[in-house]
Length: 371
Image (cartoon, rainbow, N blue to C red; front, side, top):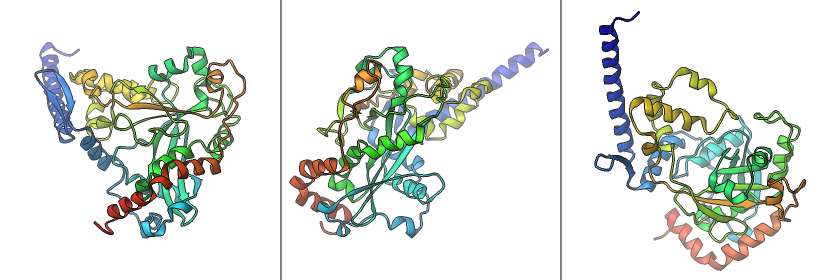
């Protein structure tokens, strides 16, 4: 039995430790541009773009060393004939050359990129004319629950549990230089609708039991969604079949997970919580345990997670009857007949060709060829 004096001493030492950790967390966040407002008792991210860039430096492997064999896949503007751009989708496989290409492509991102979770399909998009990287996109399991999405779809809990399997979220999507200056990110967004994507999904997840229910579900991909990094995104603006739905509430934990703040908080999370780390064991595990850890330190978890980073929510349905399928009013999806050729032609005619001259000038300036 612990004596009262010893108990009081332990409580005092624990309180001192919490105080030091709390100050260290505030210092870490301050270095990212997130400060504590004592008057209003809340956190403020004064310049979200700068904060995201700092997080990207920590998270996206910008400090890694890549050999010339990898770097040669980034094109120079002189190696591109915009009118001959033709995408080739290559699925990324762990442990081989495509995985290295993927890691290198991420270094060009100015926002932190997560690793995705649950089911995950990643593609590198190469340009057939020169075998250089146009861009990348990664699809992973969507949030189990999202008021914005769920209200828009109009499904109930039973329908969501059954048909969420047919949805994926684009957790990273965009073009690398110099294709990003040629509106290549719009082309990458269109690539998500190419038949090879849902065919890859079907092949990869046919006859697979789900983790949550243990059932074998229809491997029919009918719905892709994503979130803009900085409120609304120019990538999806006026783009074929990508629809803006609304804004999120502005919660995020990337500023905690990416910095070493996460390691500090872990000390104040009971060990049994780490046994619940797994897909199908509730809503976002990191979000749940962060709340517990922050509460134990004495920080308001709602304030530290709600830093005002509202993100625009977009969807790209792949089937004509996507809503009927997701709400279980239809047994089979009726896919929209997008082909790679039609999507490429749309991108060229609607976005590239009307702006080709000035886009090339912009790409040249970015590459430093002339000012």
